[in-house]
Length: 303
Image (cartoon, rainbow, N blue to C red; front, side, top):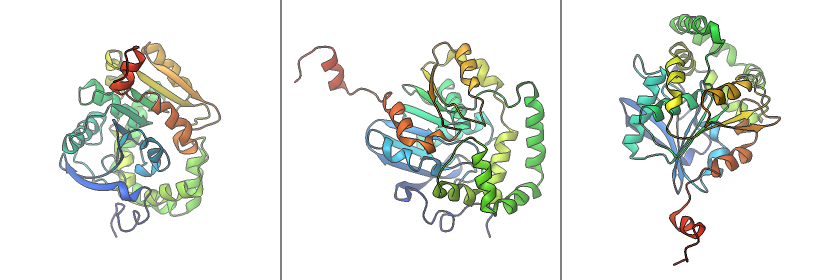
């Protein structure tokens, strides 16, 4: 049996399956979902997740956007990248290669948790130029702050031990493990959402990618470059998030005065899965205004 999720097994009833396609780009075989019409909106999930994280939000956004949502390298149904591909610059470069292969330029970009960091690295490196970057409970400050080096070192150690992902996958074969992990984020999602997380957590290859991503994650260069971000950053914060401290958004706003903080009371780290309609409304506010509407707002006569 494969270490990685397979489309015929774990993907047999994958959310929004009709929108899925498999694409070769940057030396990887990608799973990506594309749906809707209008300006391109790029969605990037966080560590240890996949496109199922957007199962209810993406169809709402597809009413106004062409939604593009890939599984990040090594996650879900996208192949594991070579050495360096799970670092922040590595992922930014690989997602950039995917966009070039699809010939798409995002007008707006939104990322959950670590996905927000990938988008910001892409924007700072000139790989994308969206109207704004939306961070959904964005993971942009090092875990443990002064102990960040220790956490990265521990992740590298665990990622290098081949039995660790297998042992965790064995534990995750018990559905209750996934339920507890998700509950510890401060979020409450339905049984269907839990089931998709549980499927992925049972596959050592998916877990190996998540550990490898944590091991190679260095946010310091990103934070140093953040003041030169050329577009607005909107930080959407679930006030009940137990994974990323809600206060991080305020610290980031102190570093980047143009950043906007939007609070979502009562929601946790997976706020976009708990209340997809509320998050969709926030993103829709940043949709590019069609030229005809721009003229109308300037007081010019309609043609």
